[in-house]
Image (cartoon, rainbow, N blue to C red; front, side, top):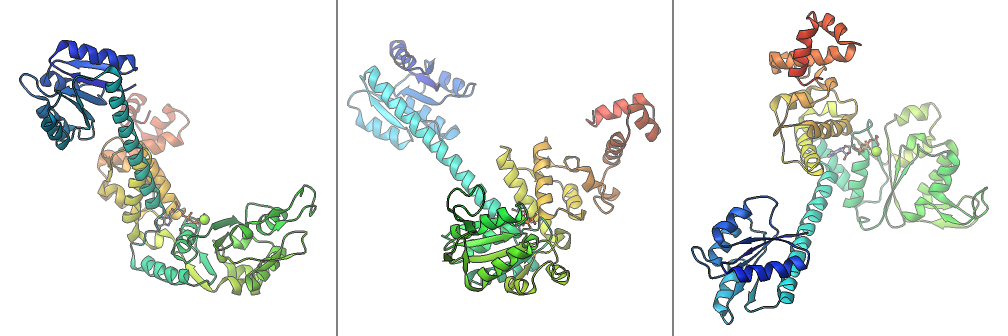
Length: 444
Ligand SMILES: Nc1ncnc2c1ncn2[C@@H]1O[C@H](COP(=O)(O)OP(=O)(O)OP(=O)(O)O)[C@@H](O)[C@H]1O
Ligand SMILES: [Mg+2]
């Protein structure tokens, strides 16, 4: 329940207000003057709303209002004015009062005014929270291109988006193929249509066929009614065929036909359906190799490969790491309710030197972990996983203090050894010393 501060130098009015508000379930604190009120506002638990008289000894309600607006601009303040003193009410509103109540007023009136003010404030808060979440989500989804190489790639993607041409996205896992597919859809004239993503890996051939093309009732055991496929769901939009290299030869034939004339039949069906959808495909495999091995139809390969966009591995574009890292830090901090965090130059150097086998996805995970682990205002090398620091070029000794080196080495040995005794022996120190160092470096 909300905490309400009632300020009035007249004890009877304070009591009347407190009784009325407590009766409605609020927690009420009374203050006999502005000084007491300000003291209470600086203490816990936080006050959610203030009701104050205008004319009091020492400091008047207007001055109190001004002071409150300086320190807590969003705190609603309701001003009580003497009957008929409109100028005072106007002045109060100008100074940022939420509302005013002309005296005398009933318990009912004060309750209503307070309830309305609290409701509006909480709606505003909710609104702000939702807005920042939306912004964050949009920010996470943004495809960042901070090197000339990736900017050029994005330019081609934008041109491809304007057409209906089939796009093939290639690149190692975690290089941003799925994100770029979505981005292309959003840049395309089909952006208001659906974006339907189908993973060609996860399902068995038959399930995938029915998933993609749909089926009719009785097509197979368990097909108890007609079911439209994902292609139909993509009408007017984009179909993203992820891991296209995993498609079986039979499905390749069916897909080829769809790519040629946009027609297909549901599994077990005789009616030919026509769908208007744009195709984007992605793979982390070498499709030419698959063609040579006869695992991918050559004609399908040429159909898909109208415009190929190659996403380079992250290790080939280390210059992008600082911008990506900063964006991921911001997103993770927001997700985990942390303040803006900075990264130390050493930590950034380590990130830049690492080879990132998991590419941007791995970078993102490492940063999220670091944001969660970090204690201070900066992300340091201590917040990064060992594998990144253990990398030969990573934050080499030149970037580390002796202490950091020691900590890292002890951590490494503790992971290898089965017992503390063994670790101490490996390190060439006695157990008591290891014990101490372990505690000092927070490695227990
Ligand atoms: N250029 C970029 N800017 C911002 N974030 C990116 C960028 N590229 C990738 N990411 C982020 O990295 C993560 C991995 O990207 P994504 O899932 O698109 O990779 P993928 O190539 O589709 O991987 P997989 O082959 O495993 O499906 C996602 O969280 C994505 O948002
Ligand atoms: Mg993907």
